[in-house]
Image (tube, rainbow, N blue to C red; front, side, top):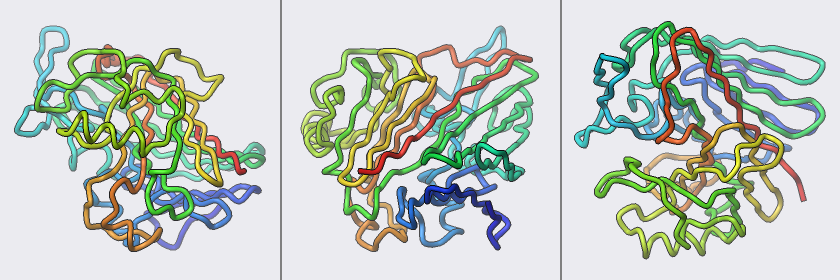
Length: 326
């Protein structure tokens, strides 16, 4: 386990070839490699990584995903940072937890190595009520190739909380994710309000959003472009058929590696990046202009859940990405 020369970044490793580098700014994943080969999109410029508005590997919060920028708790109505459509994305976009300075601590144990990030989000930061103590812990065990992310929070006043992470998976310098197979344990998803990506109801997944038989991503992505052209890519929240941490809720299957995602959340948001944003990656120059260059697998609370964490109560959820070499 080592700290990098740049104090903004901390790294941990195990005995099986897995290495993660994490940032104090945004409590994020800067890079993740297996035997020196990249598993996620890694921006070439560390400063660009810190400030990029696509949340590369960053902690999302106070509320991951999209919620209305005005809500009522008890007899008080709060207004939080939103866009022209009055939607708050990931807790306030560039003012959110993704762009805040956390305190980082390296922790060793006989089981493995951890980095723990802490931050106090003060009352009315981005408009959210209550002082919220946030703790994000990344853990890599010594004896197996897994990354576990645990989110914990406690507030002194009732406030919405749903924390997640925005890792973009791209395995071993893939040109795109077309030939990946993907499974999600979900028969229902969140339907958007027309003209927005704000979820307003739950429905059965249509064929283009059905990943229960682990189809090629290209097959479903082509269907999405045809049937949901206003979105044009996979960018949807799936309500899991069963809340369980004992079996994978999502599986990303590639030529050389399978990633199983375990979580105690009831939802996974999935996003395939076709933004064509002009950022440079160490994974390859072609990815700067590549469509479908990576997939984000984001366990979180379902947006139509009761997201309010009561004052004095504790929030705790986890996600584990298990790597299986072929």
